[in-house]
Amino acid sequence: MVTKTKRPKAPQTRPRAATRRPPLWVYLAAAGIVILGIAIAVLANRGSGSPPSSAGLPDTPDYHSLLVDPTNPDRLLLGTHAGLYRSSDGGRHWQFFKLPNRDAMNLARVGTGRTLWLAGHNVFARSNDGGRTWQELGPSSLPSLDIHGFAVDPSTAGTVYAAVAGEALYRSTDNGATFTRASPDVAA
Image (cartoon, rainbow, N blue to C red; front, side, top):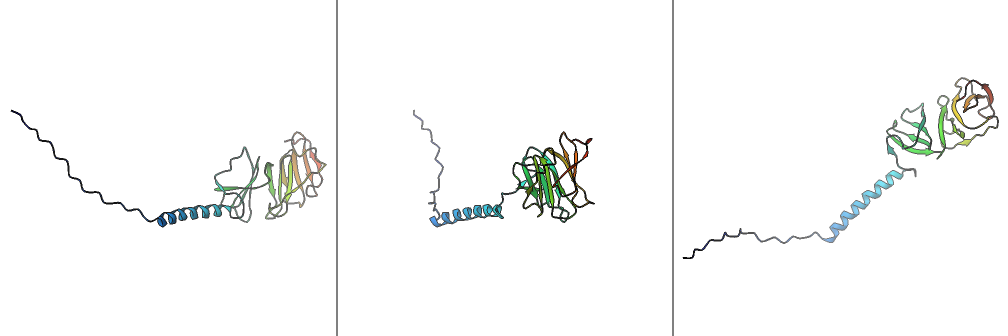
């Protein structure tokens, strides 16, 4: 006697509905929106033609000096081995500003004036317009421009001090045009 085994019935499936693709113009419109968004982001970062800001401190070998704008404490100027960086939001974002590859060890300003000073390894410069342009100074009365310390006398106009590495402390009373030795005991 032969017994038949029942096969399980295959589950019933519903017929698949035909999927309908959107028309080509929908894809083109979506691509256009993405491209427009990217273009807006790129143009927003260009702004004034300067490079985009970066969050946090700039990636440079050393941070040497920090200058706070006396009229707006959110505006900062940072001196580094790679030049000057600036921030307009209290240091949350930084943007390269001026003097590439110049070692800005010292930054100084008197009061709320627009005159800024910069001194460092083989750099000595002054800006009379808040840092937009810089004039290189090279007084022959200094033994070198390896200035490790620099200060402006806030009470005597035109008087500045420069501590030259391995030499001495020098003073100028004519806005850095000429210097005389102020002290042999102070060598940076």
